[in-house]
Length: 345
Image (cartoon, rainbow, N blue to C red; front, side, top):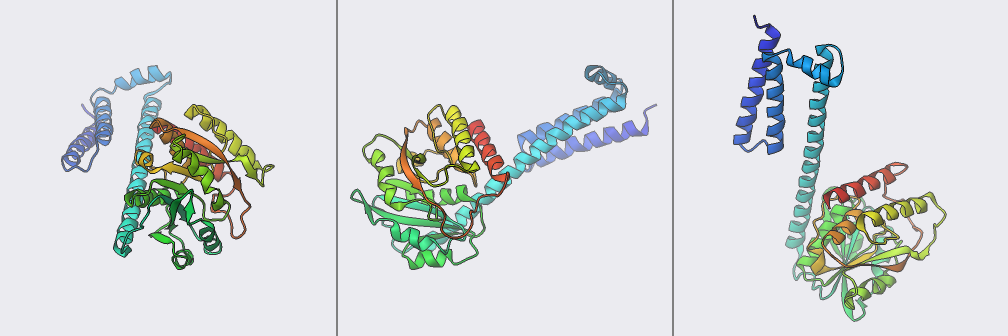
């Protein structure tokens, strides 16, 4: 006679199957989630209908007793569920990032009267609580570089200070994220506006004053001369005031790893001072919300862009503190960003 536990298993399995198909028909369950539900249904029903099958599992796992075998199977199912939840959470975060970007672009479109009038170069600057230095950065950006006009686009990434007011008082374009999303998402918003308004070259630089706007010419010259589509600034080919730090060693290590994945020599993979041909930029599929440098490089390689490094300077920060995660968090998260970008490519 069938036991109560086995009847409960049959009822539970049937519920999982019926519920999963109902949610799938309503469009609320993805294919992978339906597969997990079916796997759970089949496992529960097989055990409930024919308990000796657990002995086969015990023999495969080389354990004694059905409970141990069921525990191993349960752990495997739990692992699949955890992986699924991580993927879903990543998707939700990406969708939220898209929403933040859409709000910023809508606000920009409503506030814009005559557009950016971007004839040539857009300088995209992600900024988070940099009211003390952003004015000097904008003042130093030349109005023209090699005969090409420039215009700055500062993406205020959920700042709580007066960074946006300072940018607007300096005549720069301030685009606002309602919440802090990270450098990668801020760049995506800036890229969208730059390409939408007809920029030919997009330059990116930091808002903390560590990059020298006077060196923009070095970045765009190879693009103008059609020697490259993507030009990265390298502190190791130029001037760097912090060569003996632990961070220095970490940059060299990650640059070596990224060079291996990209199959091209890269000396400074974390540098945010770069220039990209706008027509090439639109081909890149960018998702990373914060540590965007590895994704940009690997996407550029994957899409066939020609890459070149030029010497630039990295100066010491004058005011405020670095917005990068402190301690071991930064190298771990940057390393994870490299891995994710490589898996995607």
